[in-house]
Image 1: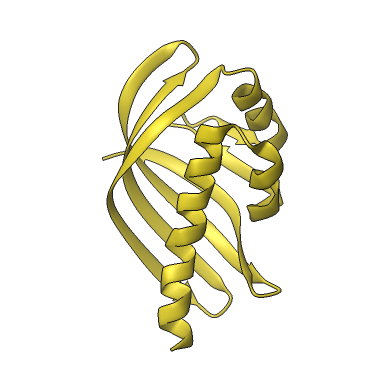
Image 2 (image 1 turned 120 degrees about the vertical axis):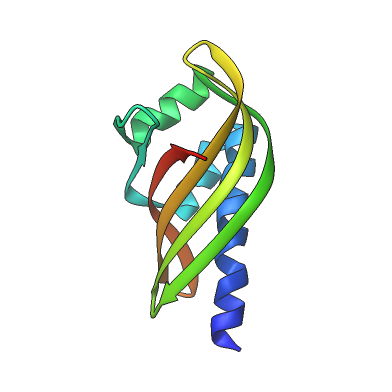
Length: 124
């Protein structure tokens, strides 16, 4: 039962992150992202969390909506790997597009909650 519960909790926290990105709620994002969280962009640039927050707050990165295509979760104890494919409507550094993004996220369970350690974006 614990594994099945975890397998539903992991996608839930990643969906929460995407919704908070759309809402520009970096304070709430901070509660589910590790203090050393990084986002690796399609370009390969590894962006620290605070820099990413500044991009969201200034709307240099503006997220509008997303449509989930496919997800998978692998759990090993208190560690998890989530792979999610979304069509993300976003304007990134001046270019708005429906991005076909695959996010591979590493998570860790802490005090009963899944925390996102890092996310790596590719296309699918």
